[in-house]
Image (cartoon, rainbow, N blue to C red; front, side, top):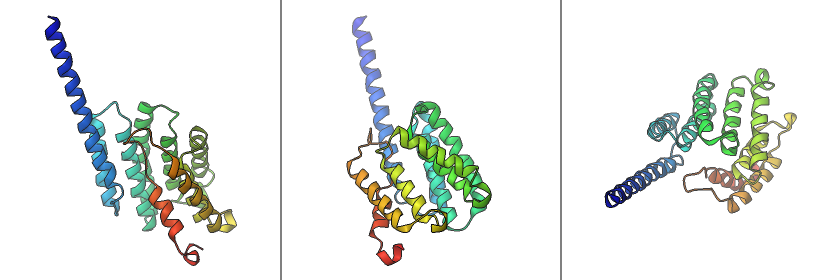
Length: 219
């Protein structure tokens, strides 16, 4: 009897390890695609992929997190194309995924709070003058929470740099100050270690890009 129980236990462990390896492989492939996506359609496809993974791996927070990130990147692509009226719907989808991720990861996850900040920022951009005191304030609150939870996180420094860089000077922004913050983000990327190979590790290329711009173009 003990022999059969041992055989069953070993078989279970083997299947579990195989399933984990398969999950890691698929997730790694999808995460790598984030860097190659260019269009809103690309990011929508990727969000769908992560949602399908999440439906099978219902105890893991990362698929929902990356689905939300894909939606946010889709929204940022649409924003660059001037399609502001689509941002509320994109933010709705991102926040739905973030709620799922937070239910699994807990409320003390800085990466999730940072994406919430980014989602509220998308909403604000629909009408900045009207939404600065609502969605803008929520975005600032989420950023503060994220920074308190993980002050060494380079993605937090990156998004702060973006905010300063793209905000007009009359509202407190500055290209020069933004570039200094991009340097801080770059330095943090050099030392920050994700908890696992699948944990968030995006953003370094963006910091490098802004710091590579000719000075006259950055101003």
